[in-house]
Image 1 (cartoon, rainbow, N blue to C red):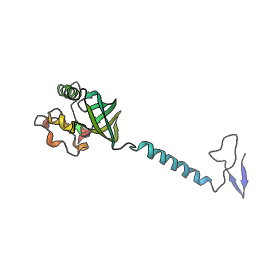
Image 2: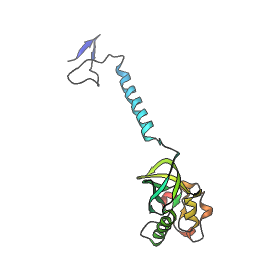
Image 3: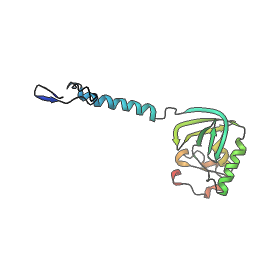
Image 4: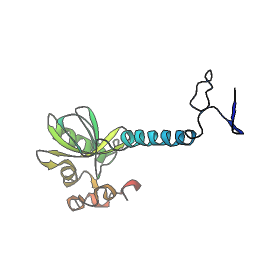
Length: 171
């Protein structure tokens, strides 16, 4: 059912149920889109922005996935600014083994950036006050990833790893 007022055909509100075709007053109709847009913005802002940016996590290392990913209290954490070789390579398996031995039964403190890489939180973790990325890079088992570290780990690279290629995401 359509209504005609002042020579203008009123179209039912988009929000009305199909059984109840009450017309939307002309002075309200333009604001429906704004209200919905505002609501969607609020939802996006609170749920897609890093709500837990710079959050802290302390706890036992429950798993070492590889040279640059650990799990703390079962929360996967990708160490920020670090590139370790992939598992299945000699260097990658050695880096993973080093991290397992280093972190077995240990408690670490992590500062999470609020960003994610796949299922992993991105963060910097410390073992007894020492940055884990500095430790593994200093041991000659990983490289600085300058795009994400801003070069803070470059000085810890050994001569052995300086010639290792970096993945494109590090440049």
